[in-house]
Length: 500
Image (cartoon, rainbow, N blue to C red):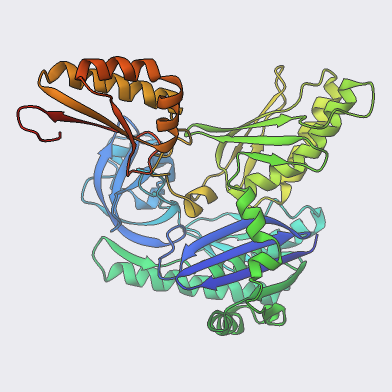
């Protein structure tokens, strides 16, 4: 499938979009003056060890301490094991492997999300163009996305021949078809990088940044551009010049793909990326047949519901209609998961099908659709309720977190009270004010316009009753606040003549 990489820089904002077959499948955004976290290497200091959670908090210089799980702690990063302990180091309790105040080299594996700090690991991995270098680890591996068994074996043998005792190697997807010379150059570069990081760690005190991951544009080129890429399009001359230098030094074979595009219309608008980003914010995603998907993101999981919508089918068989809609939904679900960067647990409610063969067909189609996803996914068989559960590795915040913020009107709930409910609350508050102020001589309800209309049209009897208790009609006025739930009850006192 032919691909394109779009890089747009406007002011302080850098945006990247990756297209497959003309459709946007990944979108990434960062501030130009911001620093990359995932992949960056730090020298940290252990500030707290939690035996009950088999984890530790590590100070690395960010606003919140990073979280290190016992399984992410390499054996060579630990404190000395007390005498008499017979277990292997990796099986020992974390409080026997780490002590507070200990310094160690860690790499950020996941961005801070919400109130949680970054997740770190002491299993450092340094990605290059065609290889990932694993300091201190003896393994040799090949990307699971390389399917050809002969090519996998060739890459495995090549990795074994180039590996040293200093670290292991994993062949990336971009390694397919590359020569031994390209491998050797990548190995030399990554080994030199690790030696520089180690030297910096030896001469600094924690917390300290030892190696910062490449910025968004260069990371996207390194990780996303493969042999089937048609073009790398940039809309900013300064960004183009910076990337030309980067490619000349690191990836000269990709220089012919890099070119400058005009800014009118904008690059993202011309290729339909802005439209896709707008759709990625919607809860409902329509498909060509008239069926649609609903995405509901919660803290614990994301629920995806497949609905027939306007698609009523063209046959008398409900099973076949359901199968067609579900098959249409599968690639769109896979694309939306990548585009929205939805991670963690995902539960998909497909339209019910009774034939086991059709259920297996949907599961196989979903696995195939997710095969191009860079993040690791694991798909479970369809349950008796017609649900498919899957997990998708979560390394950074979802796209919604980089494009949006909580609504100041509804405080992020996505819903506001009906005008009738706000009217009832305002009237209840008015009754409380009248009961507490025996000297009251006037009352004004300052409410949103929609609430004002409801009060006058549907709550006239209550307003009349309150006016009788005050001795003059209750005034209803439009409030100054744009918030649809906010109101004020103002009273005038006979004793002071002042409003309150």
